[in-house]
Image (cartoon, rainbow, N blue to C red; front, top):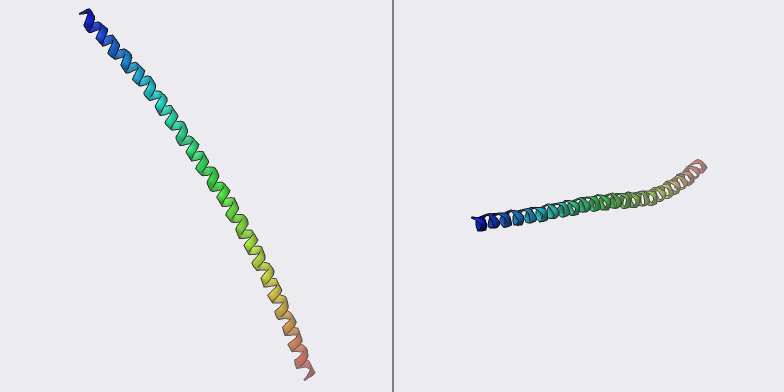
Length: 87
């Protein structure tokens, strides 16, 4: 009878140790998940900012190219008008 009680106590103690270990494992996994989510969010925001900056630079370059072409077209038009007026 005493041996059965002792074995039962040992099984309970083992179960409690396993439960404690499982709880620690779950907490560690949850922290890793949170860390991964935060890292992914930060990476996405950083990538978003980089892409927006690239778009602004490209748009700026395109705008200046368009401005130059408009100026050239206006100069050409003014020259042609002048030529037509001379005729």
